[in-house]
Image 1 (cartoon, rainbow, N blue to C red):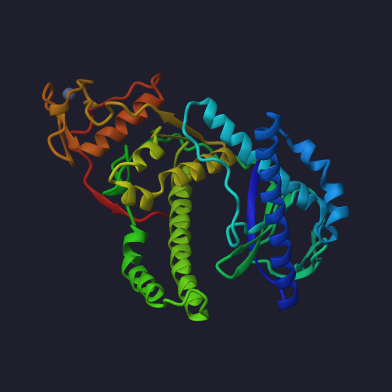
Image 2 (image 1 turned 90 degrees about the vertical axis):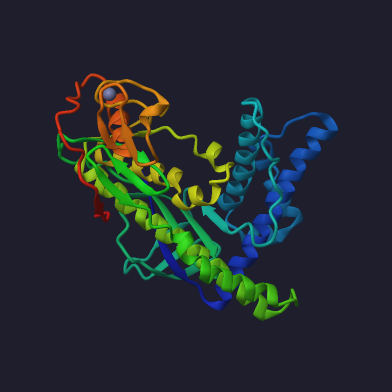
Length: 383
Ligand SMILES: [Zn+2]
C-alpha cells in the first residue's frame, strides 16, 4: 500500500533561490527532451525511449555544467516524466481518442522536483529535511511519517513549498461490520445511500464564487502586466482556488472514512464522469468532484480490507427496487419514484441506491418492500 504524507517546507531565501533555479533547469531539460523526441520522429521516424535519453545526461552535464548542481536521479525523473507523457499520448491515440500532444512546460507550470529513490532524509529531531544538492530545509512535521519512505517530491504551490513523501505502509484491515451499502451520487445531494442517508453537497466553489469574483476583478483592474500588485492579486485568486480544493479534499476524506468504517462493501455507479463533464452541468459536476472521491474511497477501502464495487448504472433510476419493473414513467419527478406496476413508492435516489447495491451483490436476496414506509429524510453531516 502506498500513502503520501505532505508537509510544509520553510526554505531560506537562498535555498528558495536555489529551488527556483533547479526547477528552471529541470523545466528546460523537460522541454529539450520533448523537442528531441519530436525532432527525431519527424526527421528520421525514430522513437526515442527513456534509456536513449538518459544515456545522454552525461553529455548534457559536460556541455552544461550547471546541470551538475541537480541531483542526478532528479534529472532522470524529469526524463521519466517526458516518457510518461509520451506513452500516455500514444495510449490514447491507440484507444481512438483525440489526445492533446504532450506540452512544453512554461515558466510557473513546472513546479516539482522528485527524488525517486534516494538523496533525501529527515533529521532525527524531525526539524529539517535534507535533500542532496539543495541542503537542509526546515520542515513542519505536522504528523509522524509512517512506513517505509519510497520517494520524495518537493513542490511549489502558490508561493509556498511542500514536500510529499510517498511511503509503503501495511494494510490494516478493519473488523467486519456485516453491512453493505449502495451509493447514488448526484448534484442536489452529494450522495444518497441505500440505507436512506442523505449526504449534503457542500458546494465549496459556489460558496466562494463571490469572493472569487471580487479577487478576479482586482486582477483585471491592474493593467500593467509586470506590476507587483498584479502578481499579488493573481496569487490571491490562486489561493482561493487552493482553499476550495483543500476543503473539497477534506470533505471527500471524511465521507469516505465514514462509509469505510461502517460497511464491508460499498457499491457505486461506474460513472463516466469525464463524459458528463462536457455537458452544461460541467460546473456543478466539477464542484462535486466524484472522480477524486471514488479514488479516495477505493484507496481507503484497499487499506482497510473493504470492498468497493463499481456497477453499470443503466436503468438504476428507472427500475423498481421491489418488483424489478423498469420504465420511464416510474420516475414521477426528480425526487419521487412510484412504480406503475406494483405501486412501490420511495425517494427516487434511495430506490436507485438500493438497485445499485443489489447489482453489486446479486447472490444476496434482498427482501425488498419489507419496510412499509420509505425511510425519512435525514440530513447527515459526514462523521
Ligand atoms: Zn414495482
